[in-house]
Image 1 (cartoon, rainbow, N blue to C red):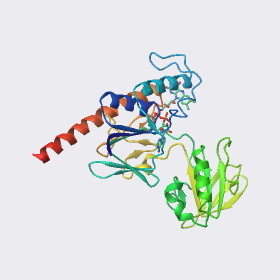
Image 2 (image 1 turned 180 degrees about the vertical axis):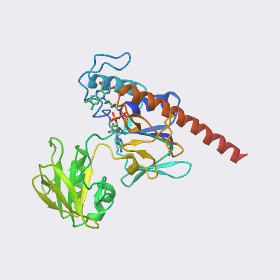
Image 3 (image 1 turned 30 degrees about the vertical axis):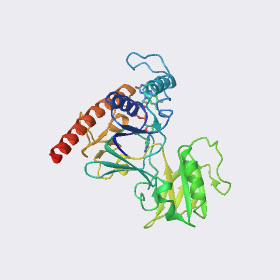
Image 4 (image 1 turned 60 degrees about the vertical axis):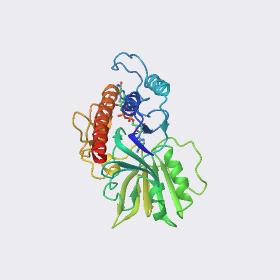
Length: 292
Ligand code: FAD
């Protein structure tokens, strides 16, 4: 099935986009987290959301969630690894699973915090962001997984079936069970080292000799996710209609630039949908003239 609009992200930008697309009767799919977004719930008290004040991030999230559930919008709990422009439509990849959509809205937020030194240099040369995509390259090899969230555990468990040795470095409070073969290292990663490809992960107190390193974050850099996408630092370059340099692909929310705010993100989600709908109309008119 080809969707009209695929929305990647379920924070305020993604949820506002979903809501407006649904009101316009579009066939949509929303990828993200059924609980909204981890960032959305972090604010202790919010006073700058028009009409909803003196609420915690969690209360605001509950209201957003109730609203989209009331509209019958479901969130597909899958992490998009790549979005490919096929010329006229897009393919969204989750491991080896593919989704098709005529337009795409990227609303993935921004990843706070620094990259590990050497992460970018060795990206694709031993550093990866998706174990389900690249695990096959590490059969009988040694890998480290730096997990920023619980999804890192799933990836580490999956890798333990393929690699000869898996180290897991949790960057959060680890609670869930990992396969007993996985060695947990409670330390801070400082640098990725190697020659042509990765051979070492340097941590604050130790060094690990590895063939590959998977870094599992809440969001990956948009330039990595969408080949050919124009970015400015950590942000996707957009115009006032939230259009990117790729026709049919839009960005909204924190990933489209500062200030990082709920209301700005929600407004941009709405704008992105409006632009996506204009593009869908254009595609429909082109299709009709071809059929004549
Ligand atoms: P996010 O909320 O970051 O949501 C991004 C979503 O995309 C997440 O669901 C994530 O899981 C999903 N995602 C990422 N990558 C993928 C992928 N590859 N596939 C599928 N899904 C993906 N703002 C205010 O206006 N007022 C405040 O008082 C305020 N206080 C804050 C306090 C704290 C402590 C923090 C951290 C932020 C605060 N903010 C505040 C900022 C606000 O949280 C953000 O601006 C807002 O959440 C951004 O919304 P977003 O939809 O762009 O991104």
